[in-house]
Image (tube, rainbow, N blue to C red; front, side, top):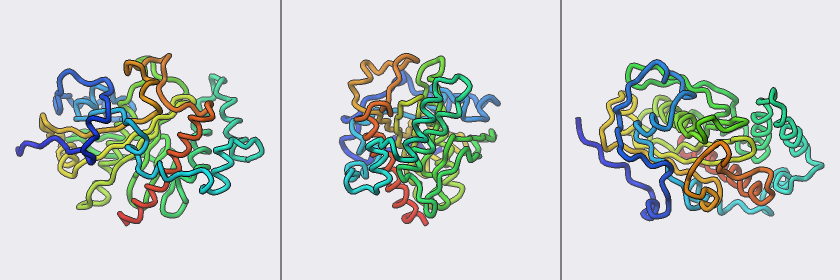
Length: 297
């Protein structure tokens, strides 16, 4: 088999501008046995995605997730989005979001997270209902070697025939801390779904949104066509990598990059300044998604 080169970064200063998240001491790409327990991406662990070649890196700025971020200026946004940015108590979407947030304290209302996330994504124009559509829990199916895998993100943003954004939401962090395996698995699923839907087309970037309670993190992954072909056959080489950049606010908030159930990294919707940042990011992702819909139509 031809040796694969490490995937190049798009920007020359990317490596210097990022910090690895839980970097592996040894890369063992392709060494993980494809057991039946891996048939659903909800069971994918940090160790497994590392063995797929995933290299998680903290982005030093939101523009590393999407270049559209800097162009999202409050006074130039539609009034409906401006009302959300102001958290206008008279706005209908804001009222709905506040209702869902009040229900987060109810142990039986896990659905509250999905509810307020959906309202916020729609309210921030992530989808336009025409070229881009936000679909709840749409299943994605793909293969790793002989293993048939199913993925069901909480939300999927479709851009024509492409899946561009996936979200994964939960009320609480897992008992093992802030694991990344599930959301990265959903991004991998989107990339493989895109490859099967649009053969011969340069793979578009895939974005992820991870929400834990009221905290939001944003991810961007890029894949080569050659890597995806080897991944589908599960015949990866030791050099295979794909970078996933993660942004959830200033790096300083992560301390020593330690992630636990009590320290949830991410932009907090409750904080007015961080709420504006996360909403700007959602608007920016919507703009990039619509541009990709035109590019890949």
